[in-house]
Length: 230
Image (cartoon, rainbow, N blue to C red; front, top):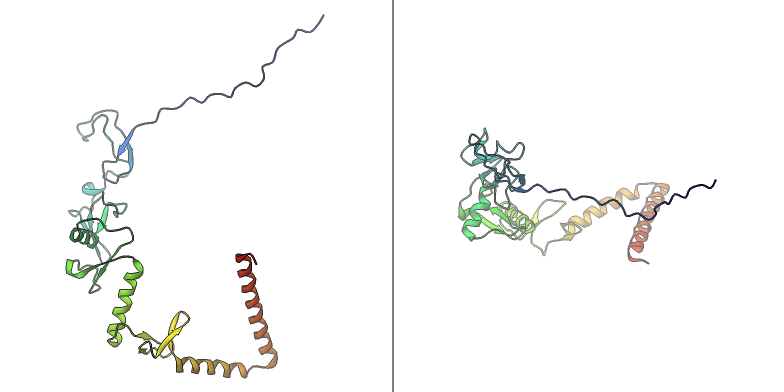
């Protein structure tokens, strides 16, 4: 009696995944702009209509329905905020800083993404249009504050402060020194002070300091060589 032959199927196609239907969504009713599911029924009590987006979880008490609602205006530290949930710079609660909105109204268009609004009197709550200056970026905004501090300290916004004696002077007297500025005389005095302390050390201690400096120098050179492929 011979064994019956049972054919075995090979190279069968993989199981075809059945696409699931994607639930339609719309913008959340609180105005945050996040996608929210559409309602399946109509409820006149809550104002929900079939086919209209609903509130996301936790968003029902936002905006005018919030317990802390104060007419759309609130404070965040020294800044004043306005409730504008559809504004590009609005936070998660739908508030935008008042000075940004006032600057945009004076400019008659939205501010660029990197623009910063500066307060002339450095009072964040004083948002009169004459007290606001639109800066192109945060670096220019920091420069305005730096020049204002210099003017209040010495009466010259272009003078620099020495890192050693803390006195201000023009560029002809206070020169650039690394990341700061210094008088040439102050830098020489500081170098002489360090040299005097170095000479008081023993020969072994001075050799150890020189060896550590050389190791750090060559470690830096090797790192630069690896970056440049040398």
